[in-house]
Length: 305
Image (cartoon, rainbow, N blue to C red; front, side):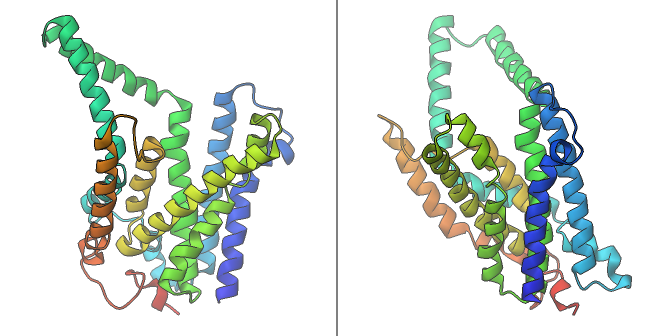
């Protein structure tokens, strides 16, 4: 069963990457005329890949016909305990970005003070201008195809394939829980190897620079994959790693220090200490499920066979 689970995960990884190039290499469609058309084409491919992966996984998992209605629960797609699945993991993840948040707050405060000095205080026009700026920013985000890629399509499809599909496969295949948490991100990082050629072209055909850039990205995706897999297994809810994924994409790499701003480094260290201290208490399975038992996946699918 372990071999079958690994082979299935390898297939899902290869399929997730290969289908992105299907329009050009297989369907022989003409190259997209713009970045927007290119990304929309990839959105469609990623959606198809996710649906096929869900169906493929359903055929392999040991689900009896009368239990088909529970399949969405196996994938962590649930409506119960929704606020816990959003608030707790998001709060936990934000602790890793304590330095980044403090730096952003300091820059915002500096800008606010500058506006106060230039404008002679807080006025209704100043408040209206700030609100209008925020509204314009949100509208631009909603119409930005890159924002849809980074905050909607990529997190959703990647979590569906590399967490919702692969973790049940590996657990049912007989792997121990911590093996699954550390193994699953390997497939997640391998799916990003396709960026090597893109980075190679972007770095003026320097293989060394491209390898270093992709290596950094792979390292980051592995570490995040461990965390996302941990969240999925502990909470049994796909929303938990999904909100963490979106938040990390929005924040980028955590800020560890800033020149002449020691408070940023202090906040980063304090946030990481708090993160380590609260990691297990804030992901206790009983916070996200009415009933838990000895089943390591909290849904019962690992006992179906």
